[in-house]
Image (tube, rainbow, N blue to C red; front, side):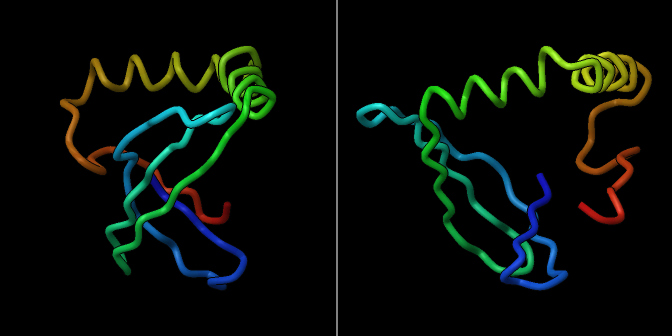
Length: 91
């Protein structure tokens, strides 16, 4: 996973999701950045946030196209970290 923050300028962070827990009305998504710094990052998302993400990712034409393309790519290329992945230039 790639991340950027406006507070870090053009610095690009690499990391991965390490866990998901539920606290009260929020889903806490824990992430660990690995490059260029090692940070623990947590995201608290409530139901409207999660529904928005699902709607944007699963129920949009761009999201559906993404899943279909990635599915067929995974059949053609053995899954290895960053092999065959095209990094976005600016996001």
